[in-house]
Image (cartoon, rainbow over all chains, first blue to last red; front, side):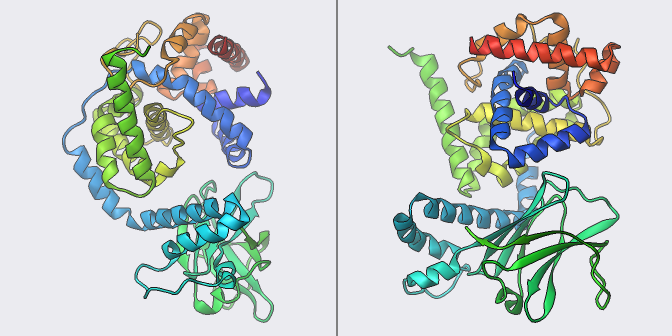
Length: 240
Length: 192
C-alpha cells in the first residue's frame, strides 16, 4: 500500500489524532485521489456494520427529526441554491453548444421565487448571469474558503466548512473596488456554509477579475471607523 | 440464471432506497420518510453500538437524518450501495459525537456486544451492504488477533491510535505497525 492509501485507511477508521485528522480532511477537500481512497476504504469496511443488530428506535424520533428540519430552513435554502448551481455547472460542463441550450432551461431555476415570466434571454444576458466563483486559500493549510456569486439574485454562498474558529478572532471578507477601496462583505462564519444577500451597490461591483481580501479581525469584525486588521489571504472572482 | 426470490426482494429494497436517495438529493423532503422507514432500525443499531447509551443514540440518530437531508447530494449512486453509504454516514456521525465529548459513556463493552470476528451478517436483513460482504468477514479472520482487535476497536468504538495503544498497553509505534500491516493484508485479501 502507498503512504497515501495507508493514511486514507487510517482516516476512514478514525485512528488519527485531531491534528492528523484535520490534515487528512484538508487533503480530502483538495485531492480527489485521496478522497477516492478514503471512500474506497469506507466501502471495504462498511459490511462490518452489517454485523450490528438492528434496533427499532422509539416512535417519537421521527417527529423530532421533522421538527429539527423545520428549524433548519435557512440551511436548506443554501442547499437548494447549491443544487441549482450544480445543475447549472453540469449543464455548462457538457459542451459549449449544449451549455447554451441547457443554461436557457436552467435559468428559470435561478430566478427569485416569483418573478413575472421573463422573455428568453439573449446570450449576452446569459453570460452576465453566469455564476462567479472565488477560492481563497488559507495560508499554510490546504483549507480554502469558497465563494460563489449568483448575479441574478445578487446573492453569494460563502463556504467555510473546513475552517475552525479559534474563539479569539473572526475573519472578514472584503471586495476591492477601484474607487472606494475595500468594501466589507461581512464576517466569515467558520465551519459553516452561509448565503448572503448583497447590497445592490456592492453587487454591481462584482465582476470577473474582481479582487477579494480576507483580514483577521477581533470577534465581530472590524469596528466601523477603525482600520481593518492584517490581510491573511486573497482571491479573485472567476467565471465558472 | 439469477437467484430466485431472496435476491429479488433484496434488490427491490435496494432499488427503492436508491430511488428515495435520488429524490432526496433533488430536494424532495418526502423522500426522507421513506428512507427513515427503511433504514432507521439499522442505523439506530449502529449508533447504539458506538455510543452505548439509548438517549445518546437517539440524539445521534436524529442528527444523522437531519444531516442526511442537508447532504444527500453527496451520495453517489454509481459508486456505493445506499445502505452501505448510510451505515458509514451514521457510524461517522456517531463517532463525531463521541469525539466532541458530549457523550458520557463509551461504547457498549465488547462482552455485551456481538463479537465481530465470529458474527455472521444478519441473514434476515434485506438491506445488506455489498456483495463482497462475506469476503470481508473471511478476510478479517485471516488477520492476527492484535490486528483484528485494533481495527475493530477503531472502527466500532471510535478509538484513535493513541487511545488503543494505551488501552492495550503497547507502544504507539508498535500499535501503528500492527494496524498498518493488518490493513495491507486486508486489502490484499479483498482484492485477491
